[in-house]
Amino acid sequence: MTPFRLRKLLKYKPNQKEKALLIYTSGTTGRPKGVIHTHESLLYGGWNTEVAHELTPDDNSLCVLPLCHINAQVVSVMGTLVNGSGLVMPQRFQASKFWFWMVDQKCTWFSAVPTILSYLMNIEEGEKIKSKLGRVRFGRSASAALPPALHKAFEERFGIKIVETMGITETASPLLSNPIDTKLHKLGSPGIAYGNEVRIADAKRDCSGFRN
Image (cartoon, rainbow, N blue to C red):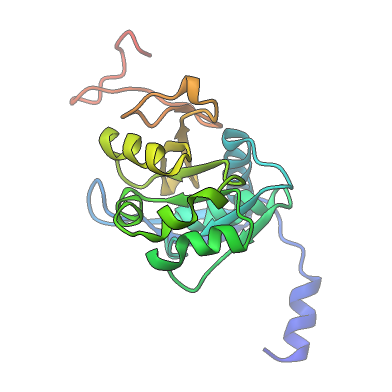
């Protein structure tokens, strides 16, 4: 980038309604779709993450998810930017180094997927460093349903509570989350709505049931 273009970029003040990101869905419900987010919707995604997980400037997050996915871009990046907390971003996920990063960088939470939690259950490094994980407040699981058996086994082995959540690309990731308070957790459930409204529909897309 030339000095001229850099100066021009630094002077630019975006409008909150302007397009900021084009990202594709994973194709869970059909062919991948392109989703356009504004500066405003990305900020709201970060704020929803902050509120749901009770983040503060004292927190420090470890991001090991790919940035081509909405989870990493909004939950890990925007969720920390909106409150000025810290973010650690290794080049890629490595199960053998995960716990070292958590301790060495003084991380207080992480965002993962069930597959990553399974990998971490099958390595010895976590057991060796378990006594040094006192700073870790929680781990966040999303992007796929978390099997209750894995959920319980992970918490029992490492002493770290796992917050199961659900998000979609169209809502800038955060949609549902279990509260931070473990007394309000429900295994096998993605939790309650934060910053969004949710309706439960049947197979015919009828939302007139008593739960709505």
